[in-house]
Amino acid sequence: MSENNNLRMGLRDGLPIFLGYLSVSFAFGIFAVSSGLTIIEALLISMTNLTSAGQLAGVPIICTGGSLIELAATELIINLRYSLMSVSLSQKIGKSVKTLDRFLISFGITDEIFAVSASKRSSLGKKYFYGLIITPYLGWSGGTLIGAIAGNILPEIVISALGIAIYGMFIAIVIPEAKKEKATALCVLCAALLGCAFEYLPFLSGISGGFAIIISAVTISTLFALLAPIKDAETGEEDAQNA
Image (cartoon, rainbow, N blue to C red):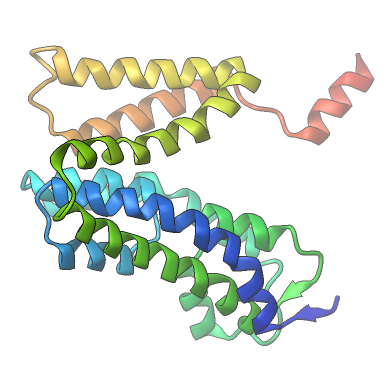
């Protein structure tokens, strides 16, 4: 299998991701500053993390004085999927990718970068990976900086409106999948109801937001993995033929 080790091609493929991350991270920058973080703190979070869901969940824990254990556990649960993506991409890594390169590349694996990499038929070299990662990284960090600065300048009513945008992104991710699978829709609904229980029920409201996210995510996802496992395409085809 030939190896794609073209830096320019990686930069080109990363450009659409850069544009998408720029707008989403802009909303995160506003959210972080409005939650009580400084511009520098918001920027450092995005420069050392490439996880919109993890950052969104982590900011309230940081701003409310949550423990490091709570923060670490929350990030581990939310970002566990990236380890699976990295294992999958390890099958496409070319010979030019050395051990240090693997560590650096794994830092930049996101849902979108994984999707682009996985769609390539050839093995991928380190120059391509670095090109594919660097443009989205600049978009994510740059958008956060612009949003954080805007959060200190724009009127409060505008900041409140823009702060909703990042939640809209997650809704846009969940709704299409929930439309396709009833089990997914029911899983999302149950997770939301359990989250509300932690917020409004007196005997559960004392649990911090970070641990509430962990408990809700692990409990509901485990329950539906047992009750309504999703069959892969090959298994589904075999079942259809046997029927």
